[in-house]
Every structure is written in C-alpha cells, then in structure tokens.
Length: 575
Image (tube, rainbow, N blue to C red):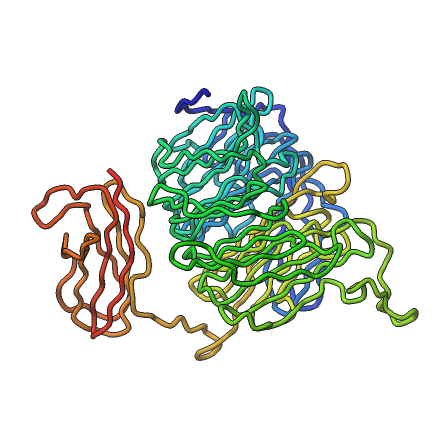
C-alpha cells in the first residue's frame, strides 16, 4: 500500500470550455417555465482564481419546470455543456453550495453562493470529484479519483479559498463498488463539520477489500483507518456530530464508533443497495432492497425493530430519519419495469404509525392504468425513475428527494405535515444528489445537481440548481417566529485539538453556570458563572483545566445550568 500526504494542484487549461446557463426567477404554485438567459460561450482562465466567473451559454432545451404547493425562488441554474455533476453539499453557515463534476471537462469542484447569479466564488480542477459539506459548519471536502493509476486524493477546504487546507493520497483504490454510477457518493461530512468520512474499495493483491477513513476537520492525518473484509461498498453515512459512521459493504452492514475507535456493530445486509441511513444520534439504523430493515440500538447491539416489503419486484430506493428522531421516510420503486412506479411513505417514530403516502404518478400505482378517456392515462414511458438521495432538513420539518426523473420531476420537497410535495422541479435530465437546510428565517434552501440528460441515456452535460422555498408564515404580518429554546446548541470544532466554541441559548435572563466535566463527573473548567440575558451566547474552552494545564485527550461533557434547567453535550478532545 502507498500512502502519503501531499498537495495536488491541477489547473484547467485555457482550452477547457465551461458553458453555463444561469437563471433567477420567482415561481408560483402552479407550474411555471424558466426562461434561461442566453449569452456567449467562453473559456476558463489557465489559473484557477478565487473570483472565477461563470460563463454563460445557450439555453437548456427542453426547459426545466417547477411546481408544488409553495411559491418558491430558483436563485440560479448552472448548466455545463460537457461535464456531469456527481454530487453536492450545502453549508448554511457559509451560505454555499459545493459541487463536483466528472467524465468530461471541466472536471472540478465549485463553491457557489446560494443566492446571487450562480457565479462560483472559486473552482478547483481535477479528474472525478465526489463532494460534501457540513450543513452547520464551514467544512468543504472532496475525493478526486484518478482511475488510470488507481489513486484517490481526499482534500478539505474552507469557503474563502480554492487552495486546500490539506490533501491526502490513497492508493490503490477505486470508488464504491458501482464506480461508474455518479449517484453513489463515497464521502460524507457530519453536520457539525467535525468529521469527514470516506469509504473506499481498495485493490489489494489478495483481492478487493473495503476501507473506512475518517478525518478530524482541519487535520490531514486519518483519525480512523479501518479495513473491512468486503470490497463491495455501496454506501456510507455519518451521524450529525460524527460519532458513528455506517457503511453498507455487501453482504454486511457496519457501524463504526468514531470516538471509541472500535466497530460498534455489524450484521448481514440481506441484499446490496445504496439505501442506508443512520439517525442523527445513532439510535436508529436502516437499509433495504427488496425488504426494508429498521434497527434500534439497545445499549449493546442494533436489535430488530421493524421490517417490511412491498412484494415481488418492488425495492427500497432511499430512506432517511429526521434529525429529531420523530420521522422515518422511505422511497420505493419497481426498478427497471414499465409502467414505472415511485412512491414515498412517512412514518412516526418510535410508534411506526403510518402518516402518509405520496405517489409520484397515481395513474400507474400498482400497475393498473387509469380508465381510458379519463385524462389520467399514463403517457408512453421513455425512462425509468429511481431515487438517488433522501435528506431531511436540520429542523426536521421538511425533506428533499432527488431522482433520475424521466417521466416524473427529478426533485421533490416534502413537508412532513403534508402528503403532497411543497415543491417539485422537472429538469431536462437526472438529479444525482440533493442538499437541504433551514434558514434563520424559517425558509428551506435546497441545492441539487446531476446529468443534463436522463441517466439511462448517453449524452453530455450537467445541471446544478439553487432553490429557496418559503416556510409556513407565522407571527405578526407574516414574519416567521423563531422560538428561542433553552440549552446547548452546538460546539465547534468537535472533536477539537486545541479549543472548542460552545454555543447556548437562554429563554430569559437568569444566572448561568457553564462547566466542563470529565467522564467521572469532575469539573475540569468553569467557563461561565454569573447572570446572562436572554438570547444566544458562546463561550470558548481552551482545552485546559482549572490549573491552566492542557487537558488530556478523551471525552468531556459541557454542562449548562440556568433557571433550574440543565443541558449537556459531549465534547471530544484529541491531542
């Protein structure tokens, strides 16, 4: 095995064309067509710069259409004439979409402001990128595959510069087992930005094997390097604070304890697919193919909680948990069969009470066509649709699903209180990935990207969208209310090597005591001890104890006491 830490700077040559279509338009609840702006094609500069501009191009044809039950705004639509987008991450803290491309030039990552005209702040060139971003932090990460020499380069960025903080080379490896499928993403960043997780298939002399890498944000040295007996890796997921990492490596599902540096659990997968989910706190684990399996952590193992199937020929496309552990969403499809069927089910947790079902096209559900002359007859099917990603927003109220599309819209956004989508986007091609966050005003921001033509057909080009969907109006004069809750809200970075910023919120003005404890309960440091006004606050722990000495590596707990209430959060210190 060859491993080394290195920087790889790749410039896109001046001959590389980057033709783009940019749009910004408000959309009503009824279907509205987007009229792309037309301009001249151009070229990227020889050296990538932080202020790299997008280059306009001819309009996309056919044009994308939007629908749903909410008025929405598409801030921009980027169209590449040759390259295909593989994946996207969204950072609410940095207000950026971070996307990667492959197959044809320009092969790059791009950091694009969520609002504006779609012009990237910067791009970074390479070969075949898969990317992700921390939704509540400013960590951007990517893996770049060089198939010719079986090498991959893992890199981390911050929003302000195209220069990576670090890069780490892995050899010999390939992407996930279905390496040619752009919709399977081998890299995940935890919501808080503490952990970058990468699952790879290693090409070893004795055969293929899987390997998990996990990095602390800001560090080029792997905090985890764990080998799996199987090289058939199909999916990887990470919990909100990076504590647990789940991997589907056929024929086994694995959950790795990132902070305990040990395998938490493994069990038979039943069949191979990329439908895999682990809840924000690691309590629930789910996956599926012909059968959907739901497990719950019992304190010593992931025990059986529930399973279900839809009969022969029906498969789990994607699944996901809301961050508050109160909802489970499952997307089903009937594979490569016509008429194509795709539907979504929502359940309450832990009761598993059925909430609602939404059928992408009710005229084909169950294979029974609508009566002739009813106006609901299915049209001639050209392409099948399979879901590619399902993600809940951090506030748990909405979730987004991307898909191959074909005869159905490629993006659906749902509110868990409604059985109809609040927004849909019908694009010319297939969407491979989606990211979703909730803004401070209560609106929903969604980014999605993929191929400019349907995934089941040959062709070039990619599309990338940024959409904002308003939340439910409340309060006075339609101004959304954002209730202030008591408690510790976020510690960053976590894990930390030096210092950690601890955020907390107070409902009213009260005396406050914020302390850091070791695992035995002993107070290591007192950060706040006195009166504080209502609102949001931060305090910094410098990683030292009360004597001023550097605290040892390990697990610590921040404890907030105010007005008779307490809140605690786990903090990991790594020296």
